[in-house]
Amino acid sequence: MNTKVLKILADNARCSIEDIATMTGLSLKEVTDEIGELEAAGLIRGYKAVIDWEKLDNASVSALIELKVIPQDRFGFENIAETIMKYKEVETVYLMSGSYDLCVIVKGKTFQEVARFVAKELATMREVTSTATHFVLRRYKELDVELVDGEQDDRGAYSL
Amino acid sequence: MIDYGKVLNPTVVNDIKPSGIRKFFDIAAGMEGVISLGVGEPDFPTPWHIRREGIKSLENSKTRYTSNAGLIELRREICNYVSRRYGVEYAADSEVLVTVGGSEGIDGAIRAIVAPGDEVIIPQPSFVCYEPIVRLAGGTPVIIELKAENQFRLTAEELRGAITDKTKLLVFPFPCNPTGAVMEKEDVEAIAEVLRDTSICVLSDEIYSELTYGGKSHVSIASVEGMRERTILINGFSKSYSMTGWRMGYACAPAPIIAQMTKIHQFAIMSAPTTSQYAAIEALRNGDDDVTTMVAEYDMRRRLMVNGFNKIGMDCFEPKGAFYCFPSIKRTGMTSEEFCEELLRSKKVAVVPGSAFGRSGEGFVRVSYCYSTDHIKEALSRIEEFLREI
Ligand SMILES: Cc1ncc(COP(=O)(O)O)c(C=O)c1O
Image 1 (tube, rainbow over the protein chains, first blue to last red):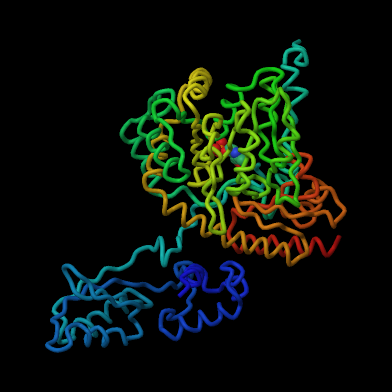
Image 2 (cartoon, rainbow over the protein chains, first blue to last red; image 1 turned 90 degrees about the horizontal axis):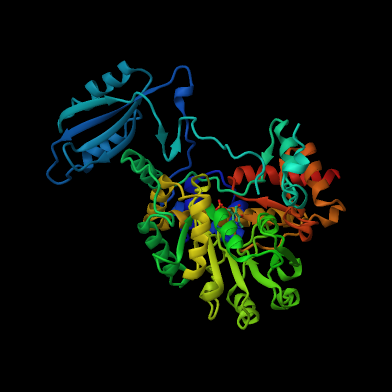
């Protein structure tokens, strides 16, 4: 497998097949096949834009929820994790090492909406023993992309 | 009233030409929305762990002069690096000088070797500083015009033709700014063969040594039999670690040469910037992965750009080093300067005329790929439009 193609797409999912071929030295067909295989094998799961939602007036809010969960006899954390991930409010679910079990990132229109979701849906689950909700105040960097307009090209037009 | 014409050094006033890009700089300065492929420095920020060591050194009050030759830890790391990467051994205490960029190393080497009347062979097109510094030292530059049909490499025949009994020094500038040419092992050996039984020294400007593409690593001429004793190896951190503003470079050479260069450095500079020296130690100790990542990125841009130029009908030989393409503009019938000025005025794209790097650069332009792929593609499409309209 050619990880170069993956790296290019990870950096810019909109890069054209032609450009990927030129940049890697592969043929168009090789690149197309490669991407097809990566998708079929489930290595590439999707192509999404990195959006700075805070630039919108009615930006949504998100929160990171620490869940402590009683693992179930046969399934451990699988069942509960897969149940939680089905909610459309849930953006991310991780099983964690350390002082809590599941890390759930939840998105909503308002603080109240997120709080309500946690209280009504997550906290009430039989397996969940406690929740701690941390609201996101500001995003600085997401998926490798800096969301603060800081560094810019200060090199000038010419130098030898 | 002082008559400055009488005060100033006539060599500086008359024999040193202003740089070939000053005019373009002025035009571009008055324009909005210029998209540039015109710079000779990386776009990546200096890797964070390297910057952090610089910051840490400031926090720990490492704000004094270092020894003239540079921190001994840094000189040791330089020796390790040059040994592991290029297979040449130098002694940290007597054969290394830490300089203010490769630039100071070049200046010091030429001043240490060249006396009035000596000839210095300079292959061109090449970086712009060699000729003026030789003139300042009272030396005579002897120019070899490198040829596109040799992929801008220096051949043994060209070198032989330029040597006289006054020849003191050969400037050996590979990987080359502006052409992107590299000298492979056989090429370097052929040059070494010409020099072996002479006492001609070599100023090997290896500032782009990390930036080579296509699987072959840089070959230092100092690693070839009989060459170490006559070579001053110049390298630095600007290009390989994206550290242009830190002003960090070094020279490695036999002790008798370094002793004289250190004397000049001591009186002209004292010591290279201390903060930068601490950052440079970190670069050499833990910077290999950063270099690999940046080189992989340059390589992709290089392919994109060469392909782009060939597609729009500007012949471009495949550069194997540095971060420049050097496409021919001969089919436009314009001079390089005219081409660059027209392109800037009509499409707001900045590239550098090949003639800024010597007469043999006429008919070419230097295009840098130290830019994002989107930026490169936008510039290429403007150049394509330009070619269609002229
Ligand atoms: C061929 C060559 N040598 C030397 C230098 C000087 O670099 P620095 O003084 O930043 O090390 C440059 C910079 O553009 C260069 O292109």
